[in-house]
Image (cartoon, rainbow, N blue to C red; front, side, top):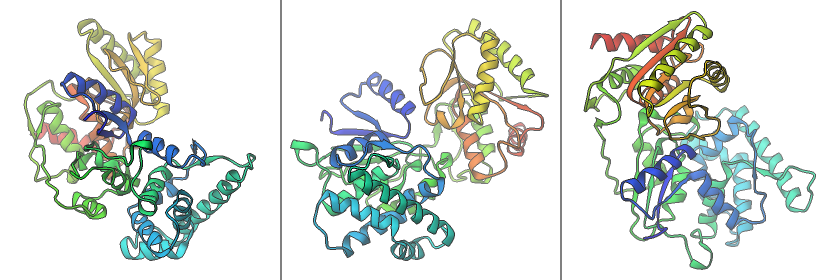
Length: 420
């Protein structure tokens, strides 16, 4: 039905990509949104008296608590314990109480995740939330001298508070918001609260598709650990899990290298199956960034002449590295060069320079991973998953570069690939 099927993705870049791909496959009349866009729209409509601006400096610790599965339990207990009216004001108060009352948080975390937060951390978070709640109360009272801002993570929590206190999310004069089907991609990087809000927007069919890869879980704050635990947080049954075993994007050479990057994080029960072979993964080591940029510029200029329709991603470990490599490649007059800042990919032939985090879910003919040093990619699960994401964006060929000694993760993966 028109407008009644929702495809939820993680990033604006993936939204744009899926928005182009689905019509090309003959799939039409599907809303494609990021969760943050969708949640903000619903929150603005249901809570018009609240400010419309999101903070840009929310502390990481606060984000971690607000995305934690324990908040689902805490909200549920708050609504059951407090006999309040089914109003938006009470829903706002419910959320404020959960985030500022230590006894409730202590009780829930002690039962569900005793090691998730230290005493000092909880004190820091609740103090922050208390101060922000006081500012919000002043702003709602007409004081425009205080910041009229909300944390972005509050949208999902506020919608969940509405569902539990008031009832189903409404769609204006059309009654409740009922989706015939909701599909969520990259679900391993969503919080249980975000997914639960969407589930309760389904019609009587309760038709839901969750797609994700636990090996590419890079949003640590979302709290994903395993499918079993994730489903338990959501309190949903009737789940059928199908594991896709064939990689249609990458070649055998790229797939084997990417598996080596994961190391022990790889899901051993899932065999590596690819449909084709391709050029070998190539590694180049340079003494400094200038030499590395010059070599990449020569290769990309030659590639532009030989394959003018090729899409290339130069993936870096940080925004400052992206600036450095973009500036150097620009001075070398590499054609069709673009620096991606905030998911503004062109999805056209040429060279995109950006950080690995920005390319989840996307693909390019050629990928160049730069800055693969131990300083940027120490042997930690997060670094392994992030490099795996970057490597598996390549369809045809993957190049690796490093100035100085490359990271242990990369060296081991190269050796593992050569021994295959």
